Every structure is written in structure tokens, then in C-alpha cells.
Length: 118
Length: 458
Image (cartoon, rainbow over all chains, first blue to last red; front, side, top):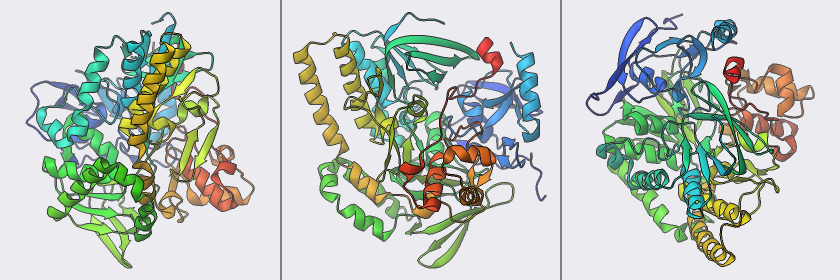
């Protein structure tokens, strides 16, 4: 493998205007990142150069958002311990913990998440 | 949260849903509107209330006009339930939805589905790689957060939205490395037959011409009539290859934005077992409704792009037409008022639809870009089922999309066939040498959004 699957890359997107005054801080993997308030988790991670968001359950292929409107389910990540959250439909909030969803573990975290969840 | 029975429940806060809500309130109906996004506007007016002046000016007056619609909606007295994922709409007139991790339901006398459109799947080699997105997806990113590509970007495919995004990117100061345009000479010839209709919609036509002129003036490299697109990369997109005038080209880019038109989001109408017809001009399924958009005599209506692609303005009109029909059923509008209102709305609709046959003919996506001929192309992104596998299933007797599920889990991932359904239908139709109508579509069953047992119980 030439590059690490989880390596971050140069961001593909950047916000056009000066940084907004209102930001929130969330944890992505083991890093604290500040992002504009009101954006979706998917937009926030793209602006930070997250590279891939998840790997697939079948072949562990890397994936990232494709549609940004809730139909493709490629942006599934783990948010605050809950697996398979649609990052493009979730608004960022302070203290949120976001992790990449690694394909093979999806089922086990889903069951675990259900048991731990309310 | 439980509501008492409302007169009209609307799903979707785009032009159709918002206009329907405003019209229904005008005749005194109680209205609840559910939408998956945090703010009203749908994808076309995404983020319009929060956008600053600069962003609104870049996106143009058609976008900025959405602010008047969201304002009128906010003031009309309809209840707006935002960030709500509707996972079931039943013929028993019940709607189940998920909001903030909890399931809730409501009952309505009538229901209007206005779930809009989605970008047509573009199954190419490498289209699953990170760094490959829909042009519409990139436009949503700009509308909602002002995000622009950091490096010169490649746009590929066909359709008005591709050129619109290119134009908007230029206004915003982004650099376009190339536009790989898959519209062929034969498409222009086919479209010319519909030019008379298009000229009656001359305002739309003029807008398009102005955009193309701007691209020329900015000397954006355009590869017209390109075909055989494929994206290369190991872990993410690195380059795009294509054939242009018989020569093979390759352009390096970490971000490739694809687009070949939009198709109706028909998840609800399929889950309701509505009949659907295959459209040979729009190359997608169209739910069968009466002239007001009603499915059978169900009390459930469809308006806007989810009933066949008509564009934002016609979607709004269809929403209003459905709302007037509902008001009439509930005896809230007098016969004379109804007739006058319907006459005016139908006149609007006719003029808003003039340009459609021309656009459909000109921007018809290439067969090879809808029905991948290379066996290795991933069709079902969720379960990673390839075109070759689906052709193999057909060889051993697979007749339609539902059977591909049993053969190889095709269409059974979280997107529930949204990103592969049309491709699978057309692939099987081609392999079996029958029409897409004969092949049919997946059986779509609720929940149409993934929901956990925990959320259901919460």
C-alpha cells in the first residue's frame, strides 16, 4: 500500500470567506478541530482534509462523501459512539466525538451501540 | 411528539413542499411540513437564509429568489419539523419519522410528498474513490458553507447543473482545470427538433447561453463530445482519462466532480406501491398520478421533481396545484375560486415546462455512462457489486433487480438501491434485450431510512 488508508490529505475544499467568528470544537479521531458552527459534520471533515471517511464492510475500500444530501450513505461515520451516522445530515456541535467507520467492525459496533444506546 | 390529525402533511422543504404549504395555508388548512435538513429551502435553495451577500450574488438571482419563498413559508403559519428523517409514509395516512435520535409519528388527512431529485448515478471506473463527488454535492458544499475547491478542479459529464456550477465557481474565484463535456454532436441534432418549444422558454435558454459565453471568455478548457470516462487512483482520485475526438487524454486532479443530470427521488412512491412508468426521455421511473399529483385515490399526492424532473419553478407550481386540490376535497375553497386558481396555475406550469423536452434531448446521458460496459465497474456502491457480476446473474436466469439481491446482496446496503437501482434496471434490460419497464425496479419497503431498534424504542 502506497499511502496509509487513514492518512489525512491536503484539503480538497476551503471556506471562501474569512473564518467565521462562531466556531465549535470537535474531536476527529484523536485530533481536536475547530470548525464553523452550523456546518454539517461531512463539510467540516472535508474542510479539514479528512481524506476517507470510512472503509466498506465488503472489501475495506476507502470512501468519502459523494452526494452531500443524504442519499448515498458514503459519509457514514461514528458520532459520539453511535455507528453509521450520516455525516452530511448531522450538524456539528461542541465536544462532539467523530471517528472513521472501519468496515469490518460495523456490525459489532452496531449491536454494541444499540445495547449502549438509550 | 404526537400531533392531532392535520389537514395536510408535507414531506420535503424544497420549492414544491414550501409552495404547497403556503398555498394550503392560504385556504385555511392546518399544515405540518417535515424535512431532513436543518433549514428550509431543499437542495436548490440550500442555506439561502444563512448565506451572506457575496454567496448569494455568486449563486445568482435564481438562488437568491429562494429567500422570498422561505420567508413566505416561515410566515404562513405551517408547522415546520426540521432535521426530521421520514422513514415511513403509509396508505393509512400515518407518517413515521426520526428527529434527534427519537422516533415520532403523525396522522394527516392528506399527504404531499415532495422529496425532490437526486443526481443521476454516474457508474464509471473509479467513481467510488474519495475525491469523486457529484457536481451537485460540491454545489451544496458551497451553498451551505462557502466551500470552494483548493486546487484547479475538473468537472465532467453533461447537464445544466454542470455548467451552472462551473459558472458559479468562476464568479467565486475558483479555478477550473477542465470541463469534460460528454454531450455529443448527435445530441445537438436530436435537441434541435425541440428548439421551437425551447424558444418559447427563451428566458431559460438565454441564461444558459450567457453562462456558456462566460466560460469561453474565461478560457476554461472544454473537451466537447468526450466519451469513455474513467477515474484513476489507488486510495483516492488522482486523474481522469477520457477519449476526445479519437485521442486518449488524461488530466491529473484530486477532485473530480461528476454530473449527468438529476432523477426523481422515488423512494416514497415505490414504498407506497404506486405504479411507475419508465420514461424513455428522462431515463428514469415516473410515479403514476392524476393531474393534481394524487396516487390512485389514496389522498397522497406527489409534487415537484420526485414526480418527474420539471425544475424548481414548475415544482413550486405543482405543489400549489396539489394544495388547491386538497383544499377542494376538504371544502375549504369555493368552486369559482378553485377554477380561477387552477386556470392560472396550469398556465404557469405550461410556460415553465416549455424548455424541458429540449433539455432532455440535449443532455441525455450516454448509454455507456448509464450502463457500464466494463465488467469491473462497481454498480452497487454499498455492497460493491459490479456490472460484470450483474450480467453473470442474468446469464443464469436473474430476471430483475429484486433477484440480484439474492444473488449478491445488490441494492441491500444502507442506500437501499438509491445509487444503483436505475443502473441495475437498465443493465438487466440490456442483457435480457427487453425494455426497462419489463425488468422493473426493486421492491422498496419501509423503513426507507435506516433506523436502529434503540431509536425505535426511544
